[in-house]
Image (cartoon, rainbow, N blue to C red; front, side, top):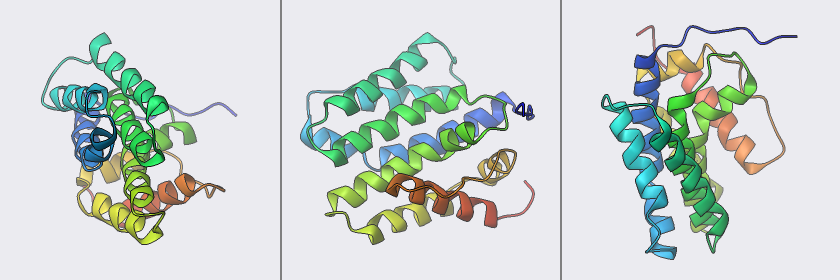
Length: 180
Protein backbone atom coordinates (compact mmCIF):
# COMPACT_ATOMS: atom_id res chain seq x y z
CA UNK A 1 0.00 0.00 0.00
CA UNK A 2 1.51 3.39 -0.96
CA UNK A 3 2.19 5.89 1.79
CA UNK A 4 0.01 8.95 1.83
CA UNK A 5 1.41 12.44 1.61
CA UNK A 6 0.92 14.72 4.62
CA UNK A 7 0.81 18.49 4.71
CA UNK A 8 4.21 19.53 6.07
CA UNK A 9 5.39 23.13 6.16
CA UNK A 10 8.87 24.56 6.60
CA UNK A 11 7.56 26.32 9.70
CA UNK A 12 6.63 22.93 11.21
CA UNK A 13 10.07 21.57 10.36
CA UNK A 14 11.70 24.56 12.07
CA UNK A 15 9.64 24.09 15.24
CA UNK A 16 10.51 20.38 15.23
CA UNK A 17 14.17 21.30 14.66
CA UNK A 18 14.25 23.62 17.69
CA UNK A 19 12.71 20.97 19.96
CA UNK A 20 14.98 18.25 18.56
CA UNK A 21 18.07 20.40 19.22
CA UNK A 22 16.91 21.14 22.76
CA UNK A 23 16.43 17.43 23.43
CA UNK A 24 19.74 16.35 21.89
CA UNK A 25 21.70 19.00 23.76
CA UNK A 26 20.66 17.42 27.06
CA UNK A 27 22.95 14.43 26.48
CA UNK A 28 25.77 16.11 24.53
CA UNK A 29 27.97 16.29 27.64
CA UNK A 30 28.06 12.48 27.75
CA UNK A 31 29.72 12.34 24.35
CA UNK A 32 32.06 15.23 25.06
CA UNK A 33 33.20 13.70 28.36
CA UNK A 34 34.38 10.63 26.44
CA UNK A 35 35.68 12.29 23.26
CA UNK A 36 36.49 15.88 24.22
CA UNK A 37 38.25 16.74 20.96
CA UNK A 38 35.40 15.62 18.65
CA UNK A 39 33.05 18.50 17.93
CA UNK A 40 30.86 16.76 15.34
CA UNK A 41 27.77 16.26 17.54
CA UNK A 42 28.07 19.81 18.91
CA UNK A 43 28.33 21.14 15.34
CA UNK A 44 25.22 19.18 14.32
CA UNK A 45 23.23 20.72 17.17
CA UNK A 46 24.51 24.19 16.28
CA UNK A 47 23.57 23.64 12.63
CA UNK A 48 20.02 22.51 13.41
CA UNK A 49 19.57 25.42 15.83
CA UNK A 50 20.63 27.81 13.04
CA UNK A 51 18.06 26.22 10.73
CA UNK A 52 15.38 26.47 13.44
CA UNK A 53 16.13 30.19 13.69
CA UNK A 54 15.65 30.74 9.95
CA UNK A 55 18.86 29.41 8.45
CA UNK A 56 19.25 27.49 5.22
CA UNK A 57 18.36 23.82 4.85
CA UNK A 58 21.34 22.85 2.73
CA UNK A 59 24.29 20.56 2.27
CA UNK A 60 26.17 21.80 5.35
CA UNK A 61 23.25 20.99 7.63
CA UNK A 62 22.79 17.54 6.12
CA UNK A 63 26.54 16.84 6.35
CA UNK A 64 26.62 17.86 10.02
CA UNK A 65 24.00 15.23 10.79
CA UNK A 66 25.92 12.53 8.93
CA UNK A 67 29.12 13.52 10.73
CA UNK A 68 27.45 13.24 14.14
CA UNK A 69 26.21 9.77 13.19
CA UNK A 70 29.75 8.83 12.14
CA UNK A 71 30.97 10.08 15.52
CA UNK A 72 28.45 7.79 17.22
CA UNK A 73 30.05 4.76 15.55
CA UNK A 74 33.46 5.81 16.88
CA UNK A 75 32.33 6.54 20.45
CA UNK A 76 34.06 4.39 23.06
CA UNK A 77 30.95 3.75 25.19
CA UNK A 78 27.26 3.21 24.43
CA UNK A 79 26.03 6.29 26.28
CA UNK A 80 28.32 8.54 24.24
CA UNK A 81 27.24 6.81 21.02
CA UNK A 82 23.57 7.37 21.84
CA UNK A 83 24.25 11.04 22.59
CA UNK A 84 25.98 11.51 19.24
CA UNK A 85 23.06 9.76 17.50
CA UNK A 86 20.66 12.19 19.20
CA UNK A 87 22.63 15.09 17.70
CA UNK A 88 22.74 13.47 14.26
CA UNK A 89 19.02 12.77 14.23
CA UNK A 90 18.30 16.28 15.47
CA UNK A 91 20.18 17.69 12.47
CA UNK A 92 18.20 15.36 10.21
CA UNK A 93 14.89 16.70 11.51
CA UNK A 94 15.07 19.46 8.90
CA UNK A 95 14.72 16.75 6.26
CA UNK A 96 11.55 15.09 7.57
CA UNK A 97 9.66 13.79 4.54
CA UNK A 98 5.96 14.51 4.01
CA UNK A 99 5.14 10.80 3.85
CA UNK A 100 2.86 9.18 6.41
CA UNK A 101 5.25 6.32 7.15
CA UNK A 102 6.45 4.70 10.38
CA UNK A 103 9.99 5.58 9.32
CA UNK A 104 9.16 9.30 9.39
CA UNK A 105 7.48 8.88 12.79
CA UNK A 106 10.74 7.50 14.11
CA UNK A 107 12.61 10.52 12.71
CA UNK A 108 10.40 12.82 14.79
CA UNK A 109 10.97 10.79 17.96
CA UNK A 110 14.65 9.83 17.52
CA UNK A 111 16.50 12.85 18.97
CA UNK A 112 14.60 12.75 22.27
CA UNK A 113 14.57 8.95 22.46
CA UNK A 114 18.32 8.66 21.83
CA UNK A 115 18.96 11.30 24.50
CA UNK A 116 16.83 9.29 26.92
CA UNK A 117 18.76 6.15 26.06
CA UNK A 118 22.11 7.92 26.48
CA UNK A 119 21.19 9.18 29.94
CA UNK A 120 19.77 5.80 30.91
CA UNK A 121 22.91 3.95 29.80
CA UNK A 122 25.12 6.43 31.64
CA UNK A 123 23.08 5.73 34.79
CA UNK A 124 23.89 2.02 34.56
CA UNK A 125 20.87 1.11 32.40
CA UNK A 126 18.46 2.56 34.97
CA UNK A 127 15.18 2.54 33.04
CA UNK A 128 13.68 5.19 35.31
CA UNK A 129 16.27 7.69 34.08
CA UNK A 130 15.30 7.14 30.44
CA UNK A 131 11.62 7.27 31.26
CA UNK A 132 12.08 10.53 33.18
CA UNK A 133 13.83 12.04 30.17
CA UNK A 134 10.94 11.00 27.94
CA UNK A 135 8.56 12.78 30.32
CA UNK A 136 10.78 15.88 30.14
CA UNK A 137 10.81 15.77 26.34
CA UNK A 138 7.03 15.43 26.16
CA UNK A 139 6.52 18.21 28.69
CA UNK A 140 8.77 20.54 26.67
CA UNK A 141 7.40 19.71 23.23
CA UNK A 142 5.59 22.61 21.59
CA UNK A 143 1.97 22.01 20.65
CA UNK A 144 3.00 22.21 17.00
CA UNK A 145 5.28 19.17 17.46
CA UNK A 146 2.40 17.20 18.98
CA UNK A 147 0.15 18.09 16.06
CA UNK A 148 2.88 17.35 13.55
CA UNK A 149 3.39 13.89 15.03
CA UNK A 150 -0.35 13.18 14.77
CA UNK A 151 -0.06 13.47 10.97
CA UNK A 152 2.15 10.37 10.99
CA UNK A 153 1.45 6.74 11.98
CA UNK A 154 1.63 5.68 15.62
CA UNK A 155 4.94 4.13 16.72
CA UNK A 156 4.20 0.44 17.05
CA UNK A 157 5.70 -1.64 19.84
CA UNK A 158 9.10 -3.16 19.19
CA UNK A 159 11.54 -5.48 20.89
CA UNK A 160 14.37 -3.06 21.73
CA UNK A 161 14.81 -0.54 24.50
CA UNK A 162 14.95 2.21 21.85
CA UNK A 163 11.58 1.07 20.48
CA UNK A 164 10.11 1.19 23.98
CA UNK A 165 11.39 4.72 24.57
CA UNK A 166 10.09 5.88 21.18
CA UNK A 167 6.72 4.29 21.89
CA UNK A 168 6.53 5.95 25.33
CA UNK A 169 7.31 9.34 23.78
CA UNK A 170 4.85 8.81 20.91
CA UNK A 171 2.08 7.95 23.36
CA UNK A 172 2.88 10.92 25.60
CA UNK A 173 2.98 13.41 22.73
CA UNK A 174 -0.26 12.19 21.16
CA UNK A 175 -2.06 12.26 24.49
CA UNK A 176 -1.29 15.88 25.40
CA UNK A 177 -2.53 19.21 24.28
CA UNK A 178 -5.21 20.77 22.19
CA UNK A 179 -5.22 22.19 18.70
CA UNK A 180 -2.46 24.80 18.16
